[in-house]
Image (cartoon, rainbow over all chains, first blue to last red; front, top):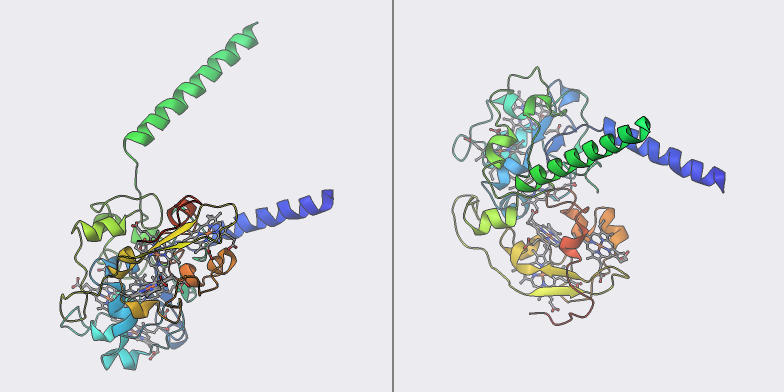
Length: 127
Length: 181
């Protein structure tokens, strides 16, 4: 009885510690880092808040075919340069072109792919 | 005797302070966003810092909310504060649906009201149908456990749309209300 509640309490403490060490970001920020760091550039940070001011969800998630699952899209730089995914807009017509490497590849080294952020909720985006 | 006086003073001070804090908080909910340079996911050494927009600059002028981006996105869109494009190359129209779905399998919690309207203002039917939800009320085996795992409503809520801590926004109707619009 005592043991199990001790277990729960320490579990909770571990949970709190984990939460506090989780990287922040604004709610809905996505990091794409399947290849970037391995290929010598910083991870990519995609801000949802910035883009949803300008586009409905549907534009990216239906028209451009981005799956609504962080990490589910296999995006390569070549595809972007060819006008797919981010490159459908970052082409110098709808938005600034791909030459501005640093603006997309702005992530802190070591940040894993996934959804970030949380103002009230510190969890890894699931909660 | 002295100690008793002291503790009375202390208690008065604390209650006084907390009351004034509460009244300040009620008057003007203070919204704060981490600047890009110390948000923990951007590299402070990157030359993008200073070029990228800080969330506070764009979000502080939009209708307030208490969770997620601290922006009431539904209101921001409806009241025309923002005009996000419906199509890649043009501003058009989305098919809007106004029906509400009431979900009653909620144990002791109030029933869930799912509004098609707020959703179809942001996205098309294909964003949900039929890979996340069937097009028949009651046909999808939604549960809170799965939602917390990132399925069903939890695909978006808890990731991009308002977080799952806001129980009462989904569990928003009394057990008696059954009729859907």
